Length: 378
Ligand SMILES: *Cc1c(COP(=O)(O)O)cnc(C)c1O
Image (cartoon, rainbow, N blue to C red; front, top):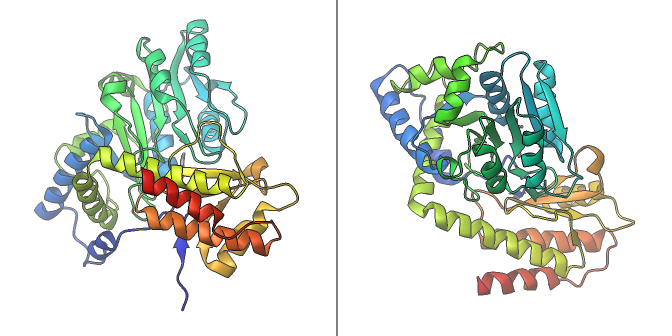
């Protein structure tokens, strides 16, 4: 018997309710049944994004939603400000480059969060910047940027704020309308508890003005064309039907738990995970840690790849290593989406055994106890 436990920052575990509903025979999308389904999903997405605007759906991984945000808000010759400091922040720059968009980067050292003052200063220095592109939860380093403070700086200006909220929506508060976030991107395989393949993009009133003017090339990812169909509970092309069926189910689960409870649960799980990690004598990598994923520094003398591999092969526990220059130097454990307190204990238990197996001195149970103490209190 082989039982696998998934603690990767995407894809994440899928609740049985969603798996079962997606196993039904396929619906046809040009039918009243699909239109009723999409009508419910549209409402559920507005609750999740905390917006009165429509949330557009595209059959794509999260990166497709990011690319869509760039091509729909910018025109040739316009400038962007890109907050880097991790693989996903860097991806914004790569997309700009692919479309010939000039951008100024703010390079944040890996493991650190951006100083929102730097964003305000960059906008004051160069009012020509049309769009700020940022990550909220930088999954590659486990850092949470202060998007609320960044939004306060941006919303006073004509510049738009585009946020990669792919590991934030459904994890922590992302009040799109309240904070004045202009484009918010989500993906199905993170806290939305679904398989990969669906990108969701919320677009503010302010952003729609730019969308109407934007002249970067686009065909599939055309916000204005897609919105026209969405308002009739339809999609321009064949939608990811089964994923939309699953999304109705996970959005129902999200509504019934309630956003504040969901945010508290993620805070609590991440706090327990961090307590367990530090009790084992390990160091956290992120200075301002995201509640979606806990990044851990690999102790000196050990290889992160071996830890990840041992967890997978001996314990069938899937976590993520470091990416790019962080390869081998950190490992990452997600507690995102369909995750509860017992999951933290399972992950720490397997990690303790693994550390002992690779020759790191641990006292079995130390991490688990520290996590349980947090769980008992909170
Ligand atoms: C997972 C993720 C993405 C999207 O990656 P895809 O593989 O395209 O789904 C983008 N940004 C962040 C912060 C992520 O965690």
